[in-house]
Image (cartoon, rainbow, N blue to C red; front, side):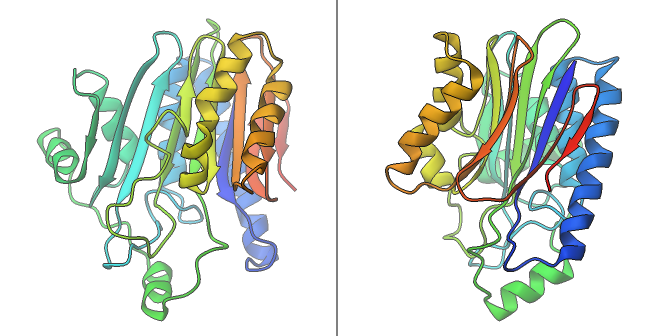
Length: 280
């Protein structure tokens, strides 16, 4: 049983060492709690549980503390994928909910598994997800000052391998900040979040770059074709490099390979496979 998580990118130039340490400590605590949860739960249940914890952490750009779009609103996207049956569900640009990953989980029970905008919000309300504002004082201040957000790209994600050898992945984002309202990121697509019986991958970075290269599903396909996880990732990142794409991934395979890579350091991540590892 193994678990790896990420919290988007950390900018050495714009983030304090105190914030970096806080993120390290938080990721360590969450991945440890998640691995304990994995002992008695499936990979799918675990990735949802862990990403909800990340969404509730003000340090990360997903759920609470998400970036504000150019019209002053926060719109969230999240998805999950069960590698055992390749069922995918997600929400895109949903507003005023606390945990978009939990709404995505609810959608697994429906034929229409990906909803956007007001339709996603209406579905959430019908299923007991109450009003919640994810805007923090810090994000509001950043928005009012129209700060340059290019160094604050971030998303959260989790990939889990359970006791039965099943994989699952979940990814959630609050966007990049000041984008055109209703811009769609990679996080609720198979480019940014994918799992099958061979590999599970969660991405972070510039959504348009990740979608352009089909990063997550491309890595998984190469693993299915016989590549090692590292080789599949490196080949896919070489294609990303052709247009200087900005991305990071965390990944697991059914054989227990665990890997992470980023094109522009430093992605924040942590893993637990009996031993705790945290980015530094």
